[in-house]
Length: 170
Image 1 (cartoon, rainbow, N blue to C red):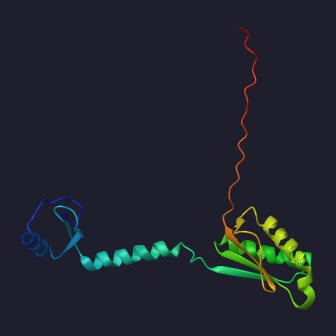
Image 2 (image 1 turned 90 degrees about the horizontal axis):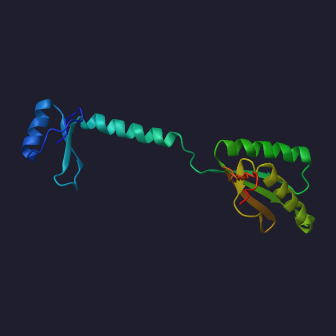
């Protein structure tokens, strides 16, 4: 049995442990039932539940739910318009969201699908410092899509310095 302050009180029978907890005006909570003997702690159970839910909320607060933001454009987009879209996507990636890029083709634009591929390549090059592409761009019907996730793979190039000294003569 463990006291409210966290000190070990020793091994007690269940009935004795319950009486001690009632004398203190607290609850007896079983912490690890699989231990031999089972470990119990004397605590205020309501306060314990409150602190546990508060801890869980704090853990969830810092995480992003894995939402996907979408950036759409056409294959004949102007460079300045594309730069605005890239800037917006960069903001999403910095916040931790995944970003899906969609290039939609209307009518005969599908004949020039390579224009869409070029734009997707420009986007991936522009954002490669903060994001990684999940595969190459894919054509689905009349839509070319690409998914990027935050966190670029850090490509660290290690330069080995060779100690070139005077050759030793034997």
